[in-house]
Length: 99
Image 1 (tube, one colour):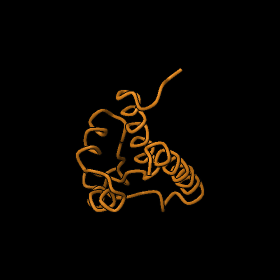
Image 2 (cartoon, one colour):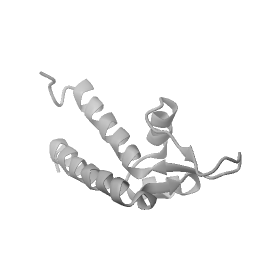
Image 3 (cartoon, one colour):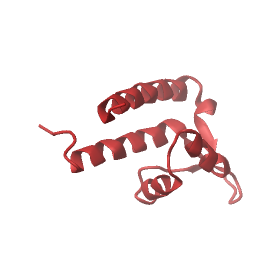
């Protein structure tokens, strides 16, 4: 599969995930302790996730007010950040041109 077709497939998937986030917000959340397995299921390296999180592109939120409240991430926001990362890599390596 070419990189452009992969990009298109992921864009469609992102649209579906955004709809789920809107209509069924609880299905959009993944807990921090489950993030590694969810990323692995989606073929994403944990290091890339951590890098995007450190840069502020991915942000977790606490479910409650307590310091021990679980942190959750939006699956759609993670996918969006990963997609942006992929497009930026394609531009940087000259695989797609920006007009």
